[in-house]
Length: 188
Image (cartoon, rainbow, N blue to C red; front, side, top):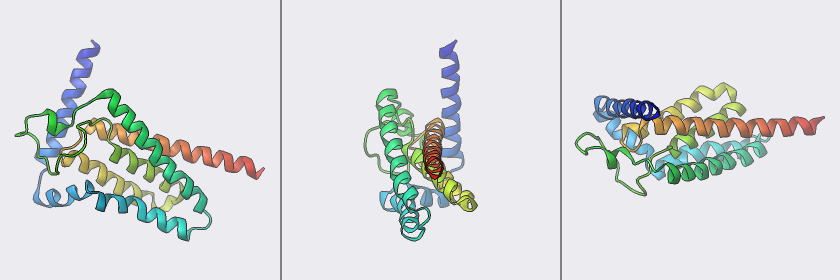
């Protein structure tokens, strides 16, 4: 029974991947979405708002200086551990290449689950949203675009990015809660 359920989930995951990667394919997204895979474009999306806030927001400087690096470290290390444990192959390495619209050069190991891009962006969005609540839709829109791009460019299945999103969100929420608990405890 367990195998039937898992096989069904993997089938749905693959079909959703093919829908996003093939059916939604268009020239505009084929140009834009691979940019989120490139370190020279992806890192500034993560670092520039953080550096700006650390320099200019005196009230939240230390919170940002501590929590953002912590969430990235936790997500990256957890994600790598899970990838080495689960060993799920990336779509472009597993499926028939005629089925996959693979838009980036293959690099690194072919391990897919979970998506560290999705986890990092969700962790950042969670921390930034907790601190700058009025801009939460902006943070989550940026995270959503990056998360969607991972499936669109053919490097992750939807369950990879969903799992990464959940993992990053949980780490971000946990760190914010711990910080607030510690800060409120020290106030009294």
